[in-house]
Image 1: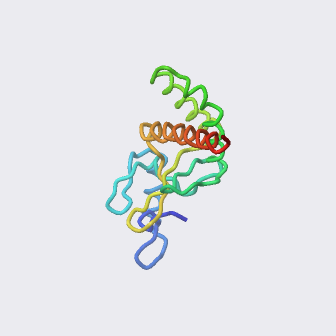
Image 2: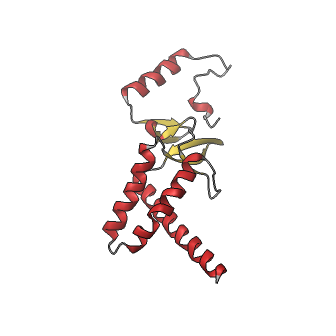
Image 3: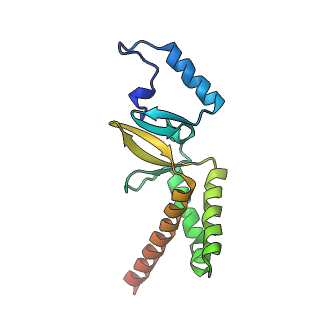
Length: 153
C-alpha cells in the first residue's frame, strides 16, 4: 500500500505500539513538520498513504490513466495554444499556475512515487518542481501535436 514499515505503529513482535501511534496522531494534528522514513526526513504533509482518483501521479516515466492525469492532459491541451502564443515567461508562468490551481480545485494533488528503504511511498511534488513538470507537459504536448500534423502531411 506504499506505507513504509517504519511508519507503522508496530513493535518488533508486530504488536500495536499505542505510544508510537498516539505520537504519530499528535504530530499530524499539531502539524509537526517532518517525520523520518528510514533515515530520510520527509515533511509529514508531503507523505500520502493512498492517492485518490483526482491526484496526478508521477511514476518514474510511466504514463498513468488515473482520472487526475487525464484531467491534467486535458487542461494542457486546452491551454496549449494560449501557452505557446504567450510572448513572455511571466505569461507562461501564470498559465502553468492556473493549470496547477485547477487540479487543486478539482481535489487533486501532484504526487511522486518514490522508493525509500525499499518501500514505495507517495510524496507531494514541491511547487517549484511542479512548475517544471507542467512546463514539460506543455512541451510534450507541442511535440505530440507537431508529430501528428507531420504524419497527416
